[in-house]
Image (cartoon, rainbow, N blue to C red):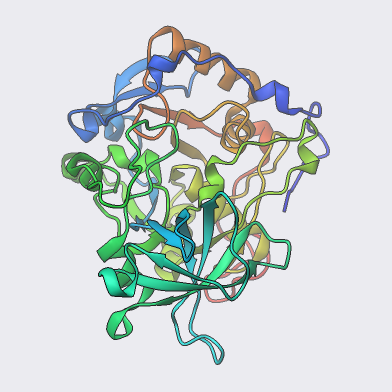
Length: 393
């Protein structure tokens, strides 16, 4: 789903979002303290180098900070086929229980040399007789040529998929973090178990962390509250598609991945209060932006979104964005360029590289304001009421 402003200056191609990144700037470990990460203040024409714990002083009383409260689950599980061939599952989502699904079905990416046929049983984490569990491949998903696979998991004593992941799974670190586990008996590092999770993570279901929120700690949250900055949350379960490269030079040909989101009623009310008092909506991370802008366009407070935000997008909700530094040619580079202006963002990235900022999930952060030319954000008093979600502000 796209929403393009006809006044957009030009059409962008994939090559426009490429840049050269020295590999040593890809953060392999988190900063010693969450809020000790660097913060590139990109609100003005000239960038300013700060520390993340400076953030509360850069916002205003009356602003609303919106977080993604998704929780990363241990979705990476190793196993083998009946033939003994090794395989790996990355469980993307647990499907809701229905008449034909007793609650044990999941959708997963499968890494294997030769894919088993539907109806085949694979043995995960040693299989049911080795302390693990079995899984039956049902079909591709979401359709017969879909990129994912639908499995029924058969745990001992009817353990749920959530319990099986917690017991046998590994934290799905991003592919650019080089210490990825490569066998099912390798333990997750304690550093990752703690730090690849936000301090307010609540709703399990993500296979990647909302990384801009990793910088927040209790000290920063307390400082925000003391300054009169309100907090609210949404949920978007980040999928592995967030790391998928865009492969088509023509951006209109890219098939965006789908992720589940929810905007709670309490957050809808907080958004209304923010606009009524003239505050700004500050999104923590691109996943929060995608959630809020999906709600604004669809009128649906929960569901699946495949919103694809590129330059020319008319933002309706978010005024300020806190985000990490993203992969070249990624949909996230396109989103931040749409938000703060292509030339400005590319200049900020050149500055960040020159100043040796740390990149990607465990890297540093950036503070951006929405370019006014990208369309007005929501204003108070519009026809959309909190109790009636459809309509425009």
